[in-house]
Length: 468
Ligand code: SAH
View 1: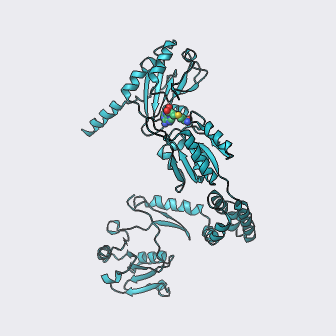
View 2: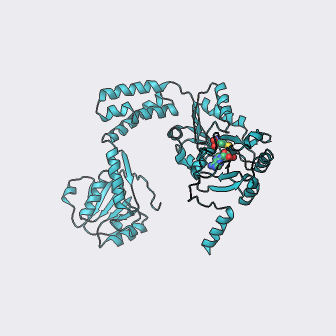
């Protein structure tokens, strides 16, 4: 972004427009939407402007000192553009030269005007037709009475602040105001329904606020794998308590002014205990906050969601759960690996490689049987031990194994190996991110276009090759 969009207060400020032609007139018309004092420097003042009290004909001829004290300058007079630009820059005043971006310091966006609601659109001059197309669509989307609705909201602000408690209640009131029946009545010009709906909403939302916690599945990483419900919860949250596995891309989807609390558990580092996390959730909910407890994948799959839910319920705090795409499902889709296939497997198991006291214990004999297929979560560190158990229980060493690290993210890596070589293959690839290990699944035989999966060394040598 070379140009930073801002909304600039021109109330009572001097704005200079140099030029008497059609372009200059257009800028003056646009500026007349503000309360700026508009000074025109042009051989003659256009008839249309002569009777406009906020337009002053400063001079017929340009002189640099005429720019003094201006908040903005527009120049639309080809012979003067360079000097105006230079003098403006000397004075530190933002200047826009019509059709000459290289001597301008700002550009004017195209706008959709529902004053005080204003949408500004810019393409930094790269794609004017695209900009116009976007403008037209937004224009069609925003009802004419929207500005009026925003003005009414502003007038109501103090009243709402005394009646409706701060936080999710207040937000819920404004949701109804801007997107529900109050808005519809206002846009339809039906003042009677407007007052009635307004009073109903004020009464409904005035009750003291009760906090609640939503356990929300963030999916494996790619933000597009969030559910619509998860996305809405992220937009409504007052507080977001999230894990290390939640990707930055997913956090981006959250309401900007939500408080974010990281409770990431990082291996080998001091991390919050589960009881501390529960205490945070209870504290925030008791303060009336809508808390989103954002967890990687699905909250109920190896995520201790059940424990958090029980602790909250025991404290009388309402809890709801939004499922997420669990890593074993997300990673499989990301690499085109079917989890069940006719003739291959009739069941599929999700299991964890780790437990509180080391490698998890499983019924290795039944997992080792032909036709068995499963995904191991948290299994990288114990992979050697797990492979040993499976081989000892009779699993064929050539049984196919696929490992997906950082699945669905930009740095996803895939490793195809066998149970007999799993440990070695993991060591060679240096898997460090979260990874799912699939055992007993074969890639669809028809997929001739399976991409070879690079190891870290392959990537490093590619980079070296590209650099040399
Ligand atoms: N609740 C989560 C699992 C948490 S346990 C879920 O439903 O997915 C943490 C384990 O999940 C990791 O050790 C890893 O095995 C797996 N995992 C999570 N995100 C992953 C990703 N993006 N790619 C590969 N594995 C992932």
